[in-house]
Image (cartoon, rainbow, N blue to C red; front, side, top):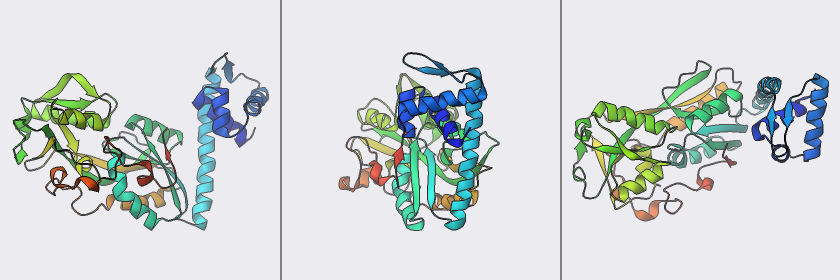
Length: 335
């Protein structure tokens, strides 16, 4: 048994297909299949049930894959210790972010990361919160940037910043000309929200509960940009985090942004990593860069969409998202 064979087994567990697992492992399918068979012979058990178009792991195979992931992660930790002893600011960091934060935060942070850690390769994975947490536990990610609270005793949580929400309404809406609103003003509103699985949905539902309102039935958006477009089309109102309406996001002439009176509803953002990670000291340095945002960026009172020049947005047409080259050092990955 060797680490290479364990890596092949983990790849097979992730892809559930010999051909795709082989491609992900940069070997031929016969090579991977042969090594898996040899591992089964060595252990004297079946790890895989082979079917014409797919595979499934046996119960023993599932358990061994869990241990294999742990072993491979420990080896990666050993290599990380050695690498960072030689050069503390080099190497690769696999960072997970959730979709309603990553595209809006990264353009403000990546240039400083490149300046502060020029030899660092940052691999970004944009996934829903539960997927990021799962991949952190399995060692497939090194760290994540997520919204609090996070209930996991295995993870260290380093607070970064608090991001306020604004109310987004279409032109002609009864609240469109208000300078600010109170939560009570939302009592007769039915807000447009994201579908299940997005942490922004949970945060918006909490605001709805405090305001004595609810979501609009029959509609759940798949992305923040869909919500934005529905508001612009006059379908209804929603909550937008402040980073999602600041440059380089393109402004919309059909949306009015209204601040909340006094303390606005908000979400708390933290960087998280496994408490056992050998990279913890470096992650503390990395977290300080993410926390050091430009002055006024998180202030809803600063000039925003309806005052921003339209040419200032380096975004993908119709999405408000920054292109991948503007948001990642190294590679941008989707898990």
